[in-house]
Amino acid sequence: MREILGLMELEGFPPRYNIAPTQPILVAVAAPPLDPGSNRPDRMAVLVRWGLIPSWVKDPREFTLLINARSETAIDKASFRAAMRHRRVLVPASGFYEWHRPPKESGEKLQAYWIRPKRGGIVCFGGLMETYMSKDGSELDTGCILTVGANRTISEIHDRMPVVIEPQDFARWLDCRHGEPRDIVDLMRPADEDYFEAIPVSDLVNKVANVGAELQTPVIPPPKKQKPATDRSDDGQMNLF
Image (cartoon, rainbow, N blue to C red; front, side):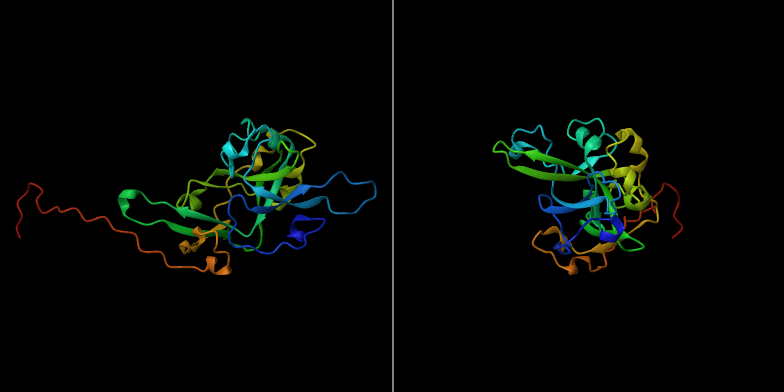
């Protein structure tokens, strides 16, 4: 991640296979302006709590946890407007989990999927960061992930997916000093159809206490129930047999 993101440093952060809301996530932010002649990287790694709290919230205990932000409305929505303008971040990951929720009448069970880049490696999601200051003066860095309508591949599992920021767009996404949020709207689009692959995994991922690599072991999902064939023997016509 240090190489892909051009980070100043990245130490002491272990791999995790099951990150839940309210837990710390690593994000990349733009570093302070470079001094003339400096050759240091221009991005820093920061830990934030997954679940954004806008600065104007009075009591976080009474505020709904903002894990995701809809990219279509984030520029104008009060909860995300300031962060879209001043605090855009990158959220690196090796993939994400998603649940397929079949219609109740189908009788099928929920199925978890591990969705990762087909080429492997790291993918970076577009995210937002906000620093919340409590009444006692303590500060808490918080963040969320932007989502967009799913492409055809992912829509078979879920109707939303994270916004993917490509490496050639990292600098433009993180540059909050120049331009306006409307200048990066084109980056908040569904990933290409062949970008991700979806791997069925067990429901172990549903428990926060399960954190090992076995969570990503592929499983064979139960076969879909077939609709009973319609009996056409009595269709109002003569039956010869």
